[in-house]
Length: 67
Image 1 (cartoon, one colour):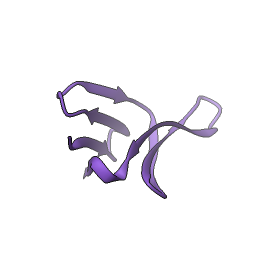
Image 2: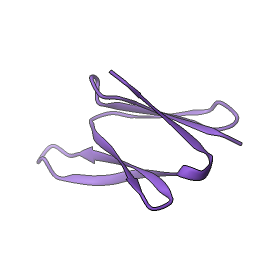
Image 3: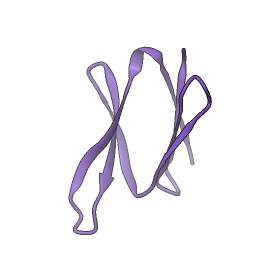
Image 4: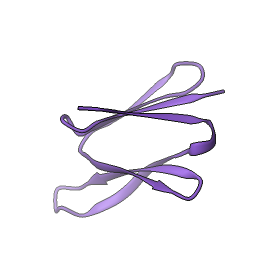
């Protein structure tokens, strides 16, 4: 049950694939932080405020960074 998280630093997008290859896409992503036990996807709103919108467990998630 390995999941995949792809962060594109140029387009500021994240794609998350679960073990069934279903995909969740996020736009306007400022960064993906490593927190204890999980990856946290951070989005920026129109006022410039950053907030977490998604978390994936590190234990069973491979993260890839694309430029």
